Length: 186
Image 1: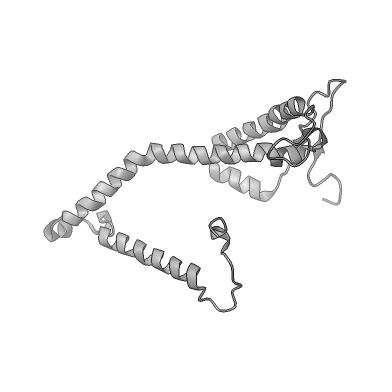
Image 2 (image 1 turned 135 degrees about the vertical axis):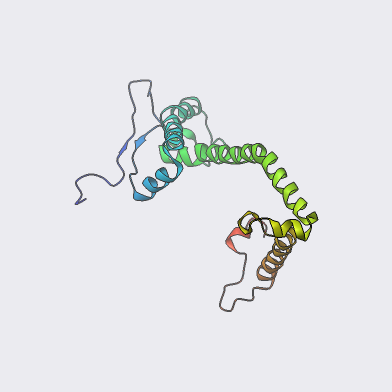
C-alpha cells in the first residue's frame, strides 16, 4: 500500500540480559488466501490454529533457543547451531516438522473416529448387492446409490490408468522422470 507499512510486519523481541523471548517473533501475513481459508474452516478451527501459532512463535521457539543456544554444534535436523539461527530458521527446522506430525496425527485420529461410519457404509453397499430387483424398483431413484460393482470396477479402471500413465508416460512432450506426487517412491 504505497510502502506505508511493510508487507510482512515483523518484531523479534530480545528482552533484557537473559535474552527473554529471543528466537521468537511476532509476524503478520494478512493475505486474501488466509482470510479465505479462515472462512472455510470456521472461527473455532481458525482460533485453534491462531493459538497454535502464538504458542509456537512466542513460547516454543524461545524455549528451543533458550535450551539449545548453548550447544556447540547443530542439533538434528538443523544444519547450524541454534544460537546462530533466525526465528524463520528455527521455525523451518523444528516447529514446521512438529506441525506436520500434528496434522498427520489428527488425520489418523479422524480416520479412526470415522471408521465405524466407513464400515457401516461398506456393509450397506455390500447389502445392496444382495437386494432383489423388485426391492430396488420400489425405492425412490434419489435413495439409491451406485451399485457396488460400478464403484469397485471404476476404482480398478482408475488404478490401471494411473499405472499406465505413471509407467509409460504416454503424454507427448512431457519431461521424463517422476511425477511430483510419486517422487517419494522414485
